[in-house]
Length: 136
View 1: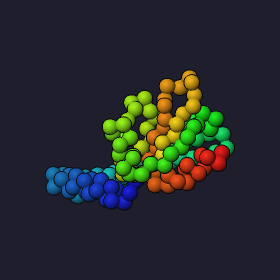
View 2: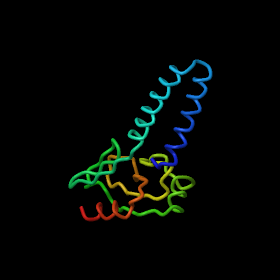
View 3: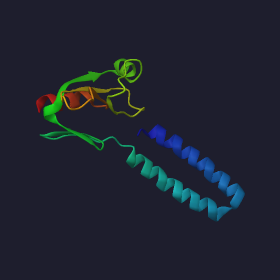
View 4: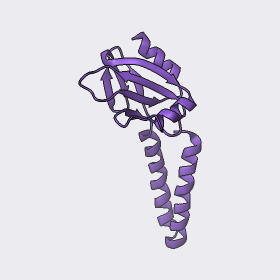
């Protein structure tokens, strides 16, 4: 998650802390501040999208697929990504996307038993992901 988004979320948390302080006093505000800071750390950790290519698997978050079913991987710039997220979207596709990342990769799936036509993954390192997929 980018820093600007974490700062925005923390700003909202701090406005809530200020409201608690005005209504309930110092101790309650301190407890809410500690809780909201810990919550921000949890949000930052849980919102990460870990993409991992091993010799046999592609892992995106909790999802994984054998590389033998991975087809053509295509880098998408921000314009292509905007179109495929919106008007050209396939509702049966797997989406590993984060709204704050504007580039990504479209990975075709070659598995007759799977109804998922492609995986759409946002990544700021789309070229490296495509290279890793084509080399394996």
